[in-house]
Image (tube, rainbow, N blue to C red; front, side, top):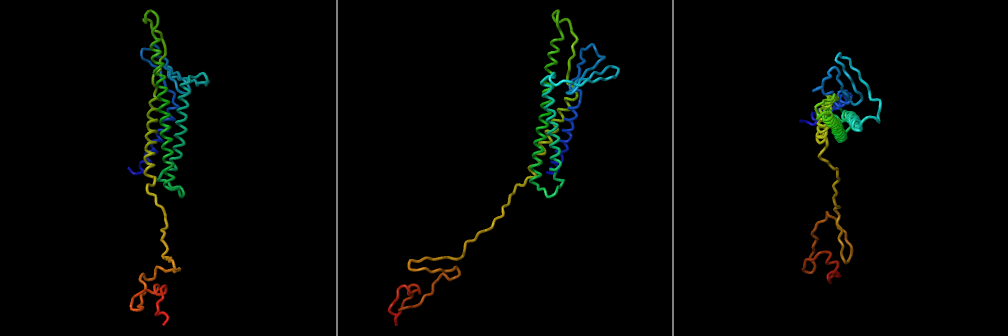
Length: 261
């Protein structure tokens, strides 16, 4: 799979996931009334994060919002906070990922900048998906605990032979929507992080100037100073003085009797 396809698919999957998280947060059927072994079937109750509703057999539905903040259970407020954080991070991640798409060219933006933006949006999608999954799981755990506590309290008196009518709640459709949406957002974030590795440049070139040493050589002698260049021949001119071959330097440093003739 190419980098562009992986990035685009990750963006689409994350977009669907964030939309599902928003839908699950706004839905009212987080918990629905358990009708098993319930003699009263004319009224159906279901609850959400923001309000509770009652639906009658005639089709009339009445909903009432929660007009209190302090009176709500702490777990319900924690679920609200997790879902809101997931929505905010997902929305910011979508905004960043739009400008990070490789198929969209904005000015002179380099691939390294797009890679950083892709990685940032991927991390945001991962955190958003984890928040949604955690919020839905916490609410589901609260439902399971209350369900078994309500079941234990349904039978009381006379050795458990008398059944008391008590409303029990089970999983609603919003929980399954939240789980699926959180999973899609998480998968989209992972795909965006994988696409970031393809956008980043692996080879780094450095411009350097080669340094060449100077071609002039300086020779130091104990009897004087003489500078020679690299273009001079390495062999010195030899002249014959007094039947022997000696160089000019040797002749000048050691004069002989023939020099005064």
